[in-house]
Image (cartoon, rainbow, N blue to C red):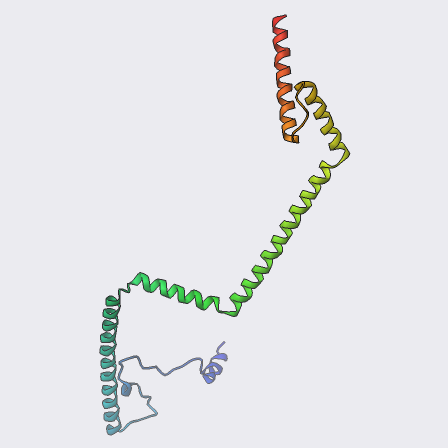
Amino acid sequence: MAAAAPHRERMGLLRTDSIPEVGEDAAATVGMSETLSEEEQNELRKELAKVEEEIQTLSQVLAAKEKHLAEIKRKLGINSLQELKQNITKSWQDVTSTAAYKKTSETLSQAGQKASAAFSSVGSVITKKFEDVKNSSTFKSFEEKVETLKSKVGGSKPASGDFGEVLNSAANASATETIAEETQEETH
């Protein structure tokens, strides 16, 4: 492990010199191998003071610009909520204009179309099967028996109407017949 340390130093991974912080006197952090004359140090101090003054001025200008911006927004009636909405709208537009979004949207659209076609196909198959059952000989025979039952129970009423009416009529007649039988049993 100790042998790896010199290798890291050569690669620049372990730095032994310090990096000056904001506002730190740059002349104080100059390495020992680089000695500055008194004149060079004074020149650097003047430059440092000038840069710090420029930073202070820029901070004041920025604060004034931000205040002016807030005043303009207030006059225009733009509030934080409206800004948030605008930012969200802009962000959504940025997202929807990306290639990844367009590709995903296209893929989902195709999948939706395929699913819709599949459901439509299933619905058609089910409808066809019901039609096949309705047209089958077994169903026709059942329907005829129900019609016969209806005509026996219903009396003189003509055998017409759809299958649902026939079933309802037969069910009502059967229930009426059962009640009549029970009444006769009670009286005997």
